[in-house]
Length: 394
Image (cartoon, rainbow, N blue to C red; front, side, top):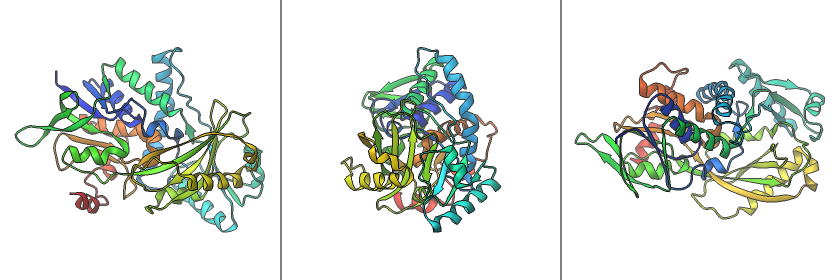
């Protein structure tokens, strides 16, 4: 049987694509060289954020995604039933603070620019910030509350999307690695070759996260996706003392930087289970998985500037993962302009959990010739900002 769609990658972006295409009546096969949700989707915090994006295309994508998550969370709960774990969707809100005098004005100016773009970004006094987060360090210089920031449990959310895709006929095949492309006489991609044999398809969607650069090369059209490593500390369970996603204003600059060197900023939030997640770091070290002690030391030190009580917290583990970094800081969503039959859903860096649903909807709209909810042109592989980097990897 020829599948309409082969999705390469069973992380949350691939899972969202599989569900959306299966719901639209397409025959879907999902391939992953490892277990589903075992890569980047298992190494993040489950953020669904608008607070960390400046005015522009990615913010519009995030706003669209934020409008989708409540409905999809409810649909998954109803469809999968009480026996399936909850995806822990929580619109907890975010609180962004400045920790220095010189950081206050840039934070407030950034929030003002977001408000002009339709974001609910509420500048609050330090007293109001302490009402939201009573255990926050009172020596902050400015604070902005983002009620629309939310969170999910990323592994469960990925598994839920895949389970829903299965219910709509999708075939999920773990531990099957793609080794190359199948092509017809015109050069069009008509499926993939794998470690388990050929998988014909009308279209191939590459959703392999930070490994998309490697897989795209196998398929003959390389994308400049690079891994960007991050680290997170996890405390033992404790009574909830952090009620929002709280981070310092340096975080936005780190997300938009192209510097390969280590960058850290303070990001702190609780989970439903009572642990506290402490991040974050960014550095480009390839796929080096070795423990990064320097990164963990900086993360811990900066977290104490936000929440001094964490000095007495016990860390039970740390983990690291790789984000799919794009040099122009925008995901790649849409048909490859170089080779027919190849589609992309990658390069979201640290925003893939939140942007997954919107990414899938944009792809389905383009594939089926429907009107998209937002302009997808800024994310297309043939966009002008990506062209110099495509030339580099050609």
